[in-house]
Picture 1 (cartoon, rainbow, N blue to C red):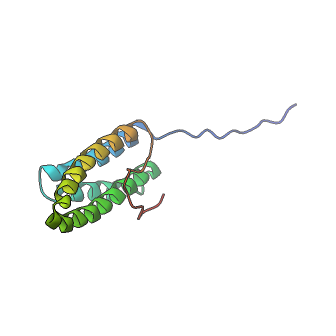
Picture 2 (picture 1 turned 180 degrees about the horizontal axis):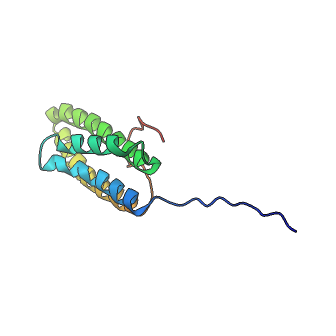
Picture 3 (picture 1 turned 60 degrees about the horizontal axis):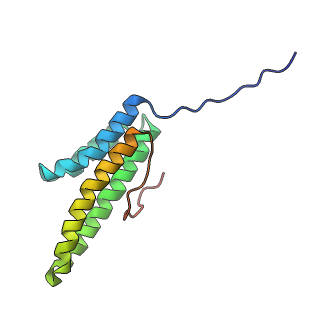
Length: 125
């Protein structure tokens, strides 16, 4: 009689986790509708679910790394706006913010956790 070998099956994130992570990324865009909503909504969403799912926690860290980085890039852009180049940087930052949030949402819905480009990694996962 041969011994039974146990195998560990690792499954990806559930549909609910992927949907929540996608909404977490898209919640950043609320800042274009209501001031500070694009910062407060992701914080609340992440704090509510980060202990329940490692996948949501990892996506929350990606979002907050970007939000902190975008704030830093924004401050630098405002300072440089006195010599005109900062105005272009602010416009580029706004476009990057929209594109990165959409790309992050698509990847999160596919079950992939990826860092946004131009992001300083404050939180590691």
